Image (cartoon, rainbow, N blue to C red; front, side):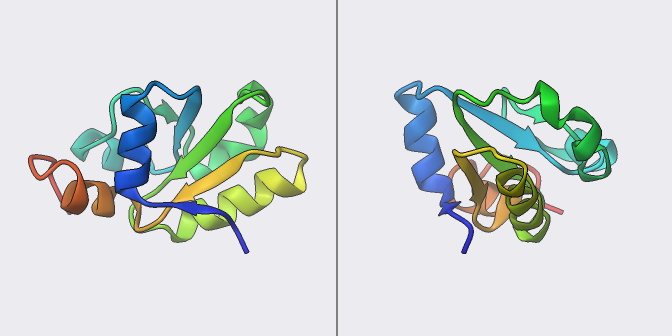
Length: 106
């Protein structure tokens, strides 16, 4: 079972400035619609190529639209030896519903 984090939990982590990396797996056209500030853009298809640039010394939170892709990507990173990997439960849609009501939903 992959470790999941809720949008309100992620908001608290960001507020206290926990050392985390937000990795947005959505394609660029989706990221242009809405994104969490400070996210690193790594479209899912490019993750194997760019995973070596991800920090291994901090928690990584994978983000997608509803949570399915982020679970797959988090499992992939865990299998590659990354230790502190989480996925955003409900994805960016959950962030828009539960944290930032001004964020565009699609």
